[in-house]
Every structure is written in structure tokens, then in C-alpha cells.
Image (tube, rainbow, N blue to C red; front, top):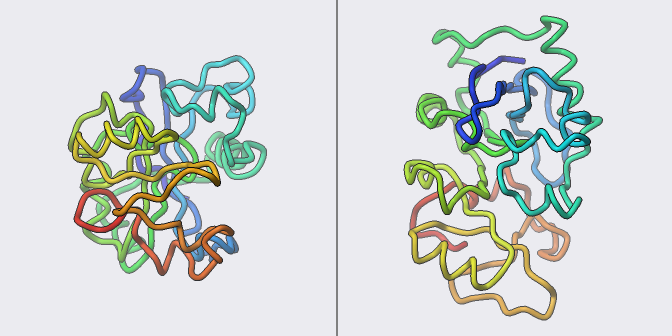
Length: 214
């Protein structure tokens, strides 16, 4: 694992770390495929405890799934393992010569945590060297517009869809079964409802700005 960033969250100023794992080991996630996972977690509080005491805003921001308890991430797995490994000094800090480990890799920015918590310069540094990346943010209303280059706007309603699109974001929308699919949207082809036709590694649509479908 490589520590890409350690410093204040760009959301609330609390101490966070961004750790890239899976650089030498293949990911066994059947939906995403083989991707380097970037975990964004509190540096000073274990993920499960941070969630329990409500001190995870610096990594989750105003994500609705934080409040609803519908987050897909099992904190006892990747985030907790990353936190423990970091505090056992099992990871190394990024240095420029380490960019070779990211070349031709597919990067999952924010396997847990919002990419906006980390300075945009970190993503500007890494993404030119990788084969592809995916990234999502719930902070699209308030964050630096420069994150549009990397992130999909995570949204839950048609009203949010209209607003995000108006602001120039591509969107990733959680919809109910009876809600329509809009003209510039497709169902995620790596999802169960999309028929699991491919993986995130091969699809690569969720990578920020451009004229691709949402």
C-alpha cells in the first residue's frame, strides 16, 4: 500500500489519509474487476468508531447514504484493514518514483470516502499515468469545479439530476425501479440490473467530465 495523502480534509479540516492498495495483488471484486483501490479514511479515528460517533463527515461529506445507513462499504473490511495497516507502519509514503506502480492500472478513486476530501492536485498527479479511473462525489454542489474532471456527481433524485447537469456534471443516479431512464443515461452495465455485461475495469464510463452518457 502507498499513502498518497496525509493532511486536513478539504471538507472539514479533520486529519485524513488516502491509501492506494491492490497495487501488486489482483482485486477479486467481480463487479469492478482488477482495480487499484484508494481508501480515504480518518487518520486519527478507526472507521467503525468514526461512523458510530458521527465523526466521519470529513471523509463522507453530506452523502445521504451516511445518514440513511445505506452505504455499500463494509467498514470492517477495506477501511478498517487500511487503518490498522497504516498504524502498524505497513505502508509507505508516495514519492515521485512510485508513479511506475500506477502505470497501466485502473484506479478506483474513493473505494471508501469522497475524493473531494483530498486536494485535487493529488488526482491531477496520478490520473495522467493510469489506464483509466472511476470516481464519484456527493459534494458536487459546493466543491471546487476542478473535481468535475475526475468525479461523477452522485445523486438520488430527478431534481438533483437536473441541478447537477445544469452545473456541468456527469451524473451517477440511484433510481427507483419505476423512475424513468433519461435520454443521456444508461443503466450501469456492471450492475445486476444492467445484466453484469462487463466490469468497471472494462467499462470506464464513470470518470468525470466529457460527452459520454451518465
